[in-house]
Length: 171
Image (cartoon, rainbow, N blue to C red; front, side):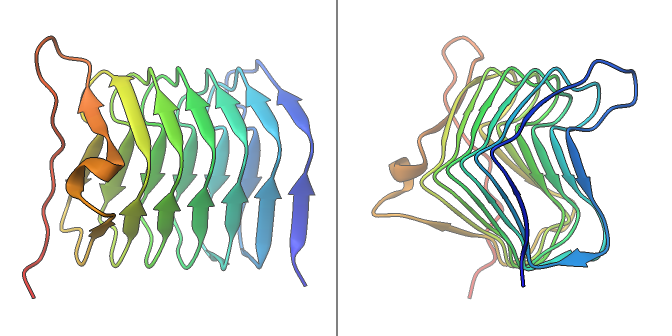
C-alpha cells in the first residue's frame, strides 16, 4: 500500500526546514501539495525511498524544488518556481522526470547527478540561471524522449544563449 501525502500547504521559515522529507519508505505518493519558503528542499527523497510518485505539486522559493537521492520513481507534472538552486535533482536509478515546469531557478532547471537510467521527457525549463538540463558525474543511460529534441524546450537565461547539455551514451 502507498503512503499518501496529498493536498497539504506547507510553509516553514526555519533555517533547516524541508517541506517534505522522506527516508526509508517504499511506495510513496506525494501529490497536489503547495510547498513554499523552505530553507532547504521543497521535497527531499532520501535514501531507500523506492517506487515513489511526486505528481502535481507546486513548489516555490525553496533551496531545491525536488531532490531525489533514490530511484524507481516518477516526478511528473510539478510546477517549480524561483528556487535558490536547482528545480529538480535526480541522483537515483531509473527515475522518470516528465511534464514538469521549472522557471526562474538559481542554477539548473533539471540536474542529473550520478543518475543512472533516468528518462527525461516533455519538461519546460525557462529562465533558469545556468542550464535547462545538466547531466554530470558519470550519469549513464539517460534517455531524452520526445517527437524531437525541441520537445523538452530547455534553455538558459543567459543573454542570447539557448541550449542544453546532454551526455548520451551511444548504443
